[in-house]
Image 1 (cartoon, rainbow, N blue to C red):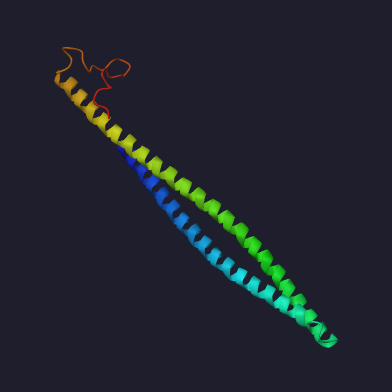
Image 2 (cartoon, one colour):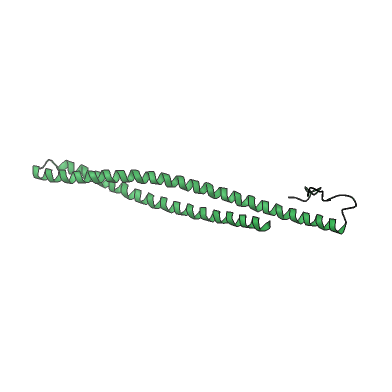
Length: 165
């Protein structure tokens, strides 16, 4: 009986450690994505600035205008690609933050479950000690004279509520 509770407690502790590792991993991923997002936003701002500069100078000549139009198109495509990547990263960040929140909730649940398991284990230990005392008392004949703590035919122990925590 005690080994079962110890095993359950050990399993709960292992789950807590797993959730801690997952939470740390999600935090690291979120930080990495946040840094990548900032870098892409800087590139986006730079690309926007370059697009504006290219537009101002495109009127100089047809030849230069054609070259700059091609450059502008390439930059706009890069800008769209960067904007799309920023949107994707923001979505991924929201998902990771949600996963991190879930991991934190699971961690708290596991901690609560571990505490409950420990309390059940402690209560079981107290009950076993109490039952052993009752059994010893019955075997020694100390309780049979007054009927207190006697074992009934159904296996119930009278007074089993005493001594429990």
